[in-house]
Length: 129
Image (cartoon, rainbow, N blue to C red):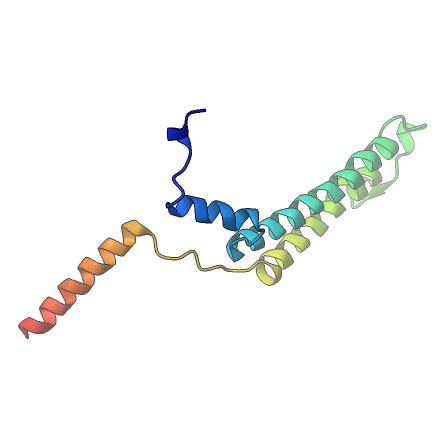
């Protein structure tokens, strides 16, 4: 690796890298990582419930003619798919409205230039009056 491909010590990239190495992360990153871990964890819980439950209760049924039903569906389908789906939807609703944080992402550089030009235009219009 050539020395020209390494970042210069005086650039902001080095200070950002040093900050990340020290474990001082941006709050937006911390929040999004925490939220991703919760979502992935809930997905794993649903997977661990649905797949084994449906396999154990839906396959190799001793008497297929006498399968128990709940609301007209086979019981294994209701308790293995439908009920967890309803629970997952309730959890998702709670998660989105109560747990997630709305972080300030700052100003988009493209929008910053547009906002400045609009402000200058409005100042010019006020000066003309």
